[in-house]
Amino acid sequence: MHRLSVTPRNLGVIAVGLALAGGAVACGPKSADSAAKSGTDAAPHKGGTLYVLNNQPQTNFDPARLYTSGGGNIPSLVYRTLTTRNRANGAAGNKVVPDLATDTGTPSKDATVWTYHLKDGLKYQDGTPVTAADIKYGIERSFAPELSGGAPYLRDWLVGAQDYQGPYKDPKGLPAIQTPDAKTIVFHLNKPEGDFPLLATQTSFSPVPKAKDTGTKYADHPVSTGPYEVVSNQNNGEHIVLKRNPEWSRATDDQRQAYPDTIDVQSGLDQAVINQRLSAGVGKDADAVTTDTNLGPAELAKVTGDKALASRVGTGHFGYTDYLAFNPKVKPFDNIKVREAIAYAVDRSTVVDADGGSALAEPATTFLPPQAAFGYTPYDPFPAGASGDPAKAKELLKEAGYPHGLTVTLTHDTNKGGEEGPEVATAIQDALKKAGITVKLDGLEHNAYDDKVYSVKTEPGLFLAGWGADWPSGGPFLGPIFDGRQIVKDGYNFNSAQLNDPSVNNEIDAINKITDLSAAAKRWGALDKKIGAQALTVPLVHPVYKRLYGKDIRNVVISDWTGVLDVSQVAVK
Image 1 (cartoon, rainbow, N blue to C red):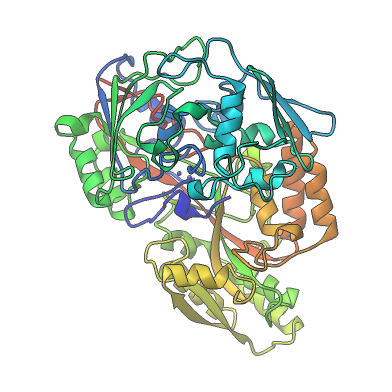
Image 2 (cartoon, helix red, strand yellow):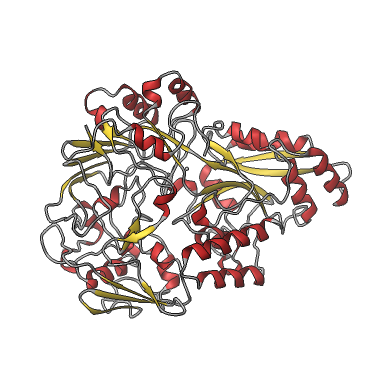
């Protein structure tokens, strides 16, 4: 998937992408369900204007260039896809459901061919019908170099797609996508992919009529299939105004409520200002929400003493894990006893504090996030309690040949308040000192940090990292980090351990053949536990999102798929 930068969580004042995830604040809702109930003292109704106050602009508002339907779900108001996420609170929101298609897809026996049929009555905002050829063309646009930025999976998954450069350079299109008739689309894959229905939720699966394609300018006035159409898109997503699409019908869309008449998205705002405006709720701000700005520790403290504000805090969980990453090719981390010693020495309680406290982070012992959809299986291969076990760590160091301790370097991002920042690094440094491990901190500016730790050529032995899910499944979580065939030698590499274990690779392949997502989840959980025993990472925390919404907002829904308020469900008083 993506790192947290896609779904932002700067704990000073904000939280995710894809952005976007446990603990509870002392007062206020403790779950997405209670958050939703707090906004339903009046029945939701149609009408009015919903204001969205965001820090990060919804840039590149082109379905080919959007990585997912993130951005607080705003793209999905305009772009419908073959499948979508179930618009429900909490874990129920992790289910994939049909959108433009009649079902979530029909796989071949080996899951290498997926067939979809379109619903009747699908129309664009101009009244013309949506066809399977439009979806094929929309997907093919995502391969065009000038429209880069979207999810890369189809280039790897579709037969013969590796070198395809999009319809502008190759109008013949991709033979791997077939449209035998106007309402049928068939995908031919290189290998079995049971997660294909989950991938089909991404915006690259949105139809684009070829005759209306304006290339790089399409984002300014895209053709809508959703409940809203774009009135204006200023400064590449800094200010987007949406109005009702008269051709959208609830008869073909049982997921989006589309209560407001207009949705006004203003971005580029200071994070503290966003929270101040939502807290005060004056004028239009009473009808406002944010999809990317979290409450920080100091702001949560203020909320604790105000029952009215506490009732307007939504709690979100997104599949994400912050962790310590090892490069076993760098000494002394080639010694598993050293890695195990560090795992025992880590004090997760201090890491939680560094990450903003128990309201904004939950301690993690598993790499997979604590959600059933991922295959979460509780385990702790190196049980050291909440505050670590320095005595056990010293014992392991002695077995490793370091009876008098050792000195290591921890690389981190200098971005304060970030999950890979100096606060967390210092917490790790202090904990390991108790076990006789001296930690030297190597802080790098954000871009330099990324360039160093995600390159096989320069990757350090120990660094802070994080990983989140493109969709709620163990596949996009464990695959990029532990599948040896995904090691990238000349680009960004996320398999920091450079693990290339045939048994792990084979199990990933076996699970990918399973089209029953519940059955697959159990296998992902078992694989997570198997890999965890090798001490290739030390899971630290799973983040939590706390966001205010306006006092006249109704029908708050926050699913575990995104962890953010779903604007397709919100009503204004």
